[in-house]
Length: 369
Image (cartoon, rainbow, N blue to C red):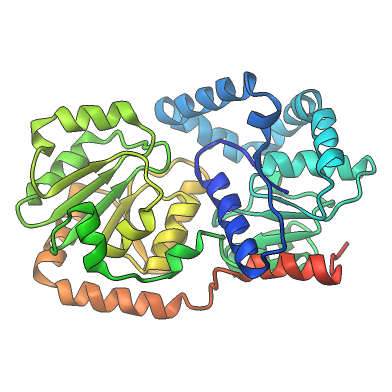
C-alpha cells in the first residue's frame, strides 16, 4: 500500500512511479496507491488542499514560515490527524492487510507511525521526495527511509536516525524518464519543429504567475521553440491562449499531460519551479534547468542543491534567461555536450533502487528496527 497526499502533484507521482517500478520488477506484486486524506475525507480534503494551493500562490512567505517552524505546528497537527485519520486508517489497513506500507508524504507517514505505536504490526517505508529532510518526516516507527542524496542521509543521521534505516536511492520517478526514445517520432506526435526548444513548467498545478518572465521568453519565438505546460491550471492556459503574444507557430501551450518525459526528451532547456519530482525528472533526462520562483522552504533547498551540482541556475534576473537563449542559438553544440555529460554522471541513481529494496524487504523480511 502506497500512501500520499494531494498537496502538489509530486508526492502522488512518486507513489505511482514506485508502483510502476514494483510491478515491472515483480509482476506478482499487487500495489494500491491512495491519497489518504482524499480517500478518507472526500469532502473535507479538497477544501484543505484548495486552501493550501491558494496560500502558496498568494502568501508564499507563510509557507516558508511554517517550513522553518515545523515543531510549533506538530502538536496541533497530531491532534488534527488523530481526529481525522487514525481510526479510519486503521480500518483500511485491517481490510487491505498490506505486507508493507510506503509513504511518499509526511502526513500519512505520521499517521501510520502512530498506528504502529498503538500496536499495528506492518513494515513502514518513507520516501522523502525533496533534497532536504525536515523533522516532520522523521519517526522512530519508520523501518526504512529512501532519500535522494548522501546529503539528505547525513541530515537524518544528525537527527538520530539509525544508518541501517537509510538508503540513498534517488527520488522514484516513472521508469519512462530513464529511457531515450527517438526524437523525430516525438516531434511528429506533438507537431514540433526540429529546432532549439525550451520547456516551461509550473508543476502539476501549473503555478506560473510571472508574466514578465514568460513574455520575455517570447522575444526569441522566431528562433527558439517554446512549450508552455500548465498542468491543471485551465484558467491560466486559456488566458495564455487568448494572449496575442503567445499566438505563434513556434509556441505550444499544453494543459495536463502524462507525457512530460517525451517533452523533456526533445527539449534543450527546462524552465521550472524546483519541485523535487520535476527536478529529478530533469536530472534523469540530463536537461539543463532554470529555476523559477522557488517556494520558501523545500523548493529553495532543491534549488540550492541542483545549482551547487551544476545542473541548474536560479532565475535571479531576466539577464539569466537572455544568457541561456543566446547559448541555445550560438553554442548549441556545447549545451548538447553538457547534457551528455549530465547523463553519464547520473547513472548511479538507478530508477529501480527503492523498488528493489522494497522487494527485498518483502522476500527476505530484512526490516531493521
